[in-house]
Amino acid sequence: MLDVRHLTRSYGSFITVDDVSFSIKKGEIIGLLGHNGAGKTTIMKIVSGYLEADDGDVSLDGISLGKNAELLQQHLGYLPESLPLYPDMTVAEHLDYAADLKGFNGKQKNSRNSIRGLGNLSLHKHVILNLFYIAYSEDIS
Image (cartoon, rainbow, N blue to C red; front, side, top):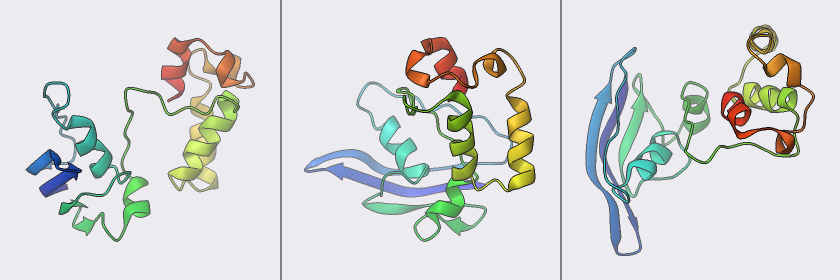
């Protein structure tokens, strides 16, 4: 279970996230709704370990993000609106890099590599990302 408790985050004197708490059980799908500037992206960055909260805690199955960010990032995925691609990498290099970040071992990585055979990505695995169409870039992310 993902537990978010009393998250608070400010930028200067502007409070973007104010005492937010929620829980997500395994298998649940949730939506995070709010108007532009409401703090949705800030919450996601805190939950995924890419930004620190001023106060509060995020834990996954009882393990606190604060002291175990790298471990938790291996179990969480987050795809922001602006795609996190490295334009000088090929499709294959990007997928290998993502597998390394998630801590996949050799067997898991080989299984991940076989996923490339699905769809059109296998046809383009040696293409540099900055030459790719945006539709394929979303598939790679």
